[in-house]
Amino acid sequence: MKRTLSIRQWAAALIIFAGFCTATLSGYLYNHADSEFEAFAEDFFLQELQADPIQFHYSIDHPETCRIDEAALTLPVYHAGDAANDIYALSIARKQLQTYEDKNLSEANRYLCRLLGTYIEAVSRTAAYPYFAEPLSPSSGAISELPILLAEYRIDDVQDIEMYLKILEQIPDHLNGLITYEQEKSAAGLFMSDHTADKVIRQCSALMDTEQLENDTHFLETTFASRLEKLVDKGLITRQEALAYESDNNRLLTTVVAPAYDKTADGLTLLKGTGKDTCGLAHYAGGKEYYEALLRLRTGSYRSIGEIRQLLYDDLAANYTELGNLLRSDESLRNMFVSENDLLPDMTPEEMLDHLQSAVEEDYPGIPSDKNSGPVECTIKYVDDSLAPYSAPAFYMTPPVDNALNNTIYINTPDVSDDLSLFTTLAHEGYPGHLYQTVYSQKSCALSGMTPFRSVLYYGGYVEGWAMYAEFASYDYAAELAGSQHPDAAGYYHACRLDRKIQLCLYSLLDIAIHYDGAELEDIQNILASFGTADANTAAAVYSYIAEEPCNYPKYYLGYLEIMELKKQAAEIWRRNNQTPAAGCDAVYDDPDFLNYFHGFLLRNGPADFKTLSDLLSS
Image (cartoon, rainbow, N blue to C red; front, side):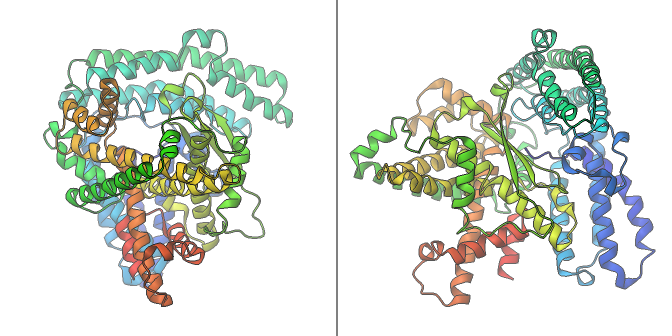
């Protein structure tokens, strides 16, 4: 789970940082541009992380090396009118960046400066519409995300315990600030629908279940006790101290956190009736323009809406045709495709992840290491039952930038029902997906001496596009694994991959239809019916989710397609430079040397937006 900073958190840090920049710029000579920019980047990175103590704790394993007093950090609190001030702060940052002329910076710093510039420009475009954001979204908002982050909060010593308890005390002010923002959204005519508000209200009650809290069985009680037990085993605290801390945690959850969730539910209840029915952004003044800006920010694609739509249409048609031909050519395959088939050997999730780690070695470069590097570890955990309805099928917890060796993947068991979905999910979250990409990127930056600043810039299209690219590749690894016992696995798994692509591509097109074209529920029902989905409840659920989470599906699938477009570009360069036969891209794609070349390029230079990557690839 990648923690991203809100526009307001960016703005607050930028205003503070502007003073630092102005003071330091005049103090350096012309030939110190690199050290000057690196100081800018490093300080900016730390200012951004300090805007949220949870974000900071997840990102930095050793705060003492940054000369940061972690105990002094507090949860961000929104105050009335803050959203309207963000665009000013972003303009200050843009002007500051313009003082660093490309010709005075090293190649690496020029690239970093460009990334920051394009990112701030993209954030600024969305900041021009201050009340379209939804921090309390039922699928990805603070209400459901905060408990997950608290359950996984790293506790290594007494200071971490005390900081964790301090954060619990700050939750009421944090949530009160979000209600203040929702009140301003309401005044602007942009409050969520009653249907969406009811979902969030139910979450508030379910996630802070009174009976569980009273019985000391709530997952925020049991996970906290489990972390304390490890400190007891290490001799860092006594059993009596652990029991005292557990008592403090239970008291704060019952008397502080749960009432804060109740108050949030009450605040949303009072605002019900002030929003429109569930609908896309196109139904609001400025909504289409905001959607265009958000699509660029979330996906990193610089294509126009028309170009994106055409890219998706072409892909949908190709996959739909290929799947139809495949099923018509083999009646047994058609029968397999409409039933669940467990064809993989009986393996635990840990064994699957180990197999994937080995299977990708030929086509993906090894993670950079030095003499001090240890093994990359990964713990697989399972989403608590109370969080299952609000969580993704799985998610990867991004490790600290200064310690990428310990990783965690969460699996939401009800959403991963068969061996193939588990295998491809672990590829998406693990190897060669999020875990591999994140650790590679962080290790590469560390060995090259590059600032970890880039990790603050979240390029969702690259990150999730890479994970989709990894997931789709894993169907071939699954076929190889099952092949000795099930020769028909290759065709079946390819059909499953095509079906998955069709669904994600279709939902990405629906995202544009709902938020840019103004499509309504009836329109979506008709579209889905044409693809064989006639169930009204399914159509309503799809419409509701996409309406509440604009740009989410394109972040994944358009991101994947943009990577495939880069792959085509890289194949042309590879053939040209290596004078390989002009046999088409497919022949090049099977070449392990080419795959290592392409994957290495993406891993070294990402995360980034796709225009920047395309320009760099062709330079």
